[in-house]
View 1 (cartoon, rainbow, N blue to C red):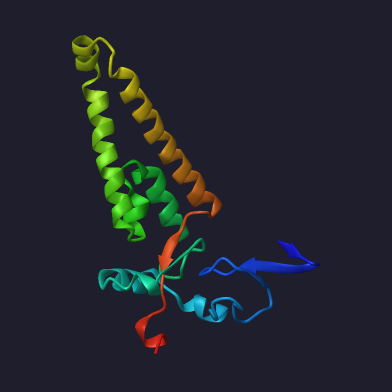
View 2: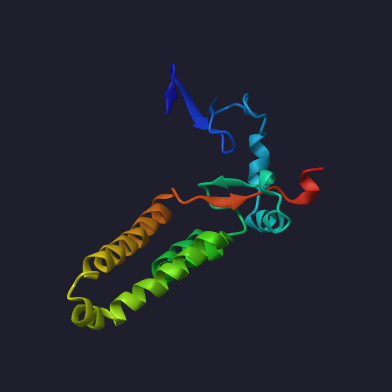
Length: 160
């Protein structure tokens, strides 16, 4: 991004535009060099303790996670939300598991639905199966292109 001939970046906390060489965000005061020490493990601990204000969702993979594992989990286990469980986003992961169970039930009971309801709900189930598959494909694209958001936080010893 360019702003008056200068390169800019977005602050991971408040999304404000900052110059690339700035050390601190002028809007929220976040020190950019401290974000290198932010980990997903610290975010897990903070989320367990209901401290959501200290957790940021960033698009860069922190040092305690591995990008290739995130891509592999998305491709192999994306239908059941594997990538969300890997980065400790449990609510979204559980949503994917429920969706997967509904998706499997639509596939298994397809013949039953055709014979009993004469296709009345087939369109609805087909729409659900198609949307669920599209979500999986979008997740693969988001992870591979770096748009997937991962919760991170500073370790407790660095926030003192």
